[in-house]
Length: 88
Image 1 (tube, rainbow, N blue to C red):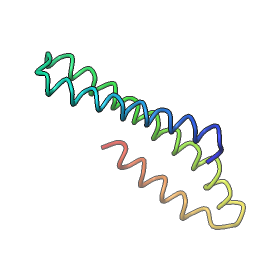
Image 2 (cartoon, helix red, strand yellow):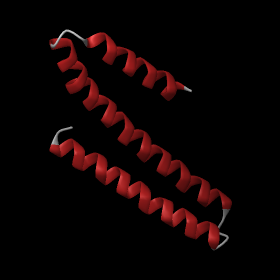
Image 3 (cartoon, helix red, strand yellow):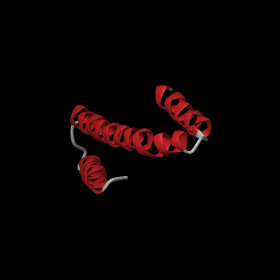
């Protein structure tokens, strides 16, 4: 993964971690359920975005390189498995 892309994913994950800490505090403080749910949805969106960026980089670099080396089928199977899990 390229440096700039890695930083972006790390920032997304660190933000999600911070929001998770906030959600835990909200639960401990018996905050309003709908507000907690909205924060959970926000964390899920950050994780989804981070995961898509990782998959994007995998396809653009690892899969592309595997095809150039003549063994791309294995990488395609990996990506299909990821998409299958993602779609569930």
